[in-house]
Image (cartoon, rainbow, N blue to C red; front, side, top):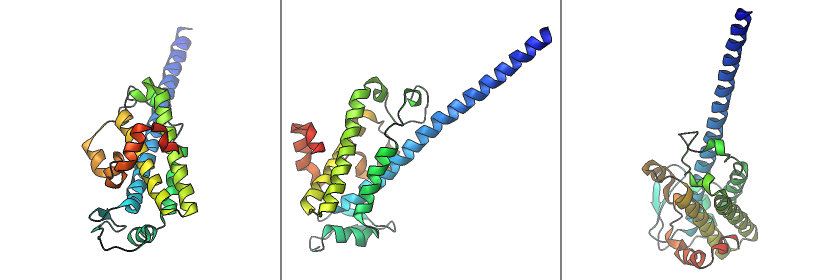
Length: 214
């Protein structure tokens, strides 16, 4: 009888360790997926910044080289974008919206920094989840507005929408994401949303936070 009990205990311990291992893998996978999605969004946002680039701004091309926007550039921003990045700006807008949707629910409590050390998210995501959800929703609205502006082919609205998307990302990062040098280096200005062309819109958001959704 004692042998049977010991055997059952061993099985229980083994199954518990297997379950714990699966749980740890699931948490890490969820964090990895959302990090990859965020990185993909920032890459696209940095490209979209070409649409709001001012003379003298540096833009990284599709082959990794850097060009400076000339003050004599008379090409339309969307055409400039296509020439520099070898793709349509609208595609980046659609992909950002899709990525935001894909990882919107990838923030359960068991993926916080208390459980997964590799996450870049601050504890505040889970301490004040309502605020995080509001900021995240701002980004979703901003991405939808950008895609609407692309469909309407309204240059001024496209510029405003790119800025509002950048500002929504930057505002969320400032509150809910750890600041690390390698993040800034990899993700560029999209991490903060601090594009020169967006300063007037930043003031608008400061006065009315809901402007991001308009």
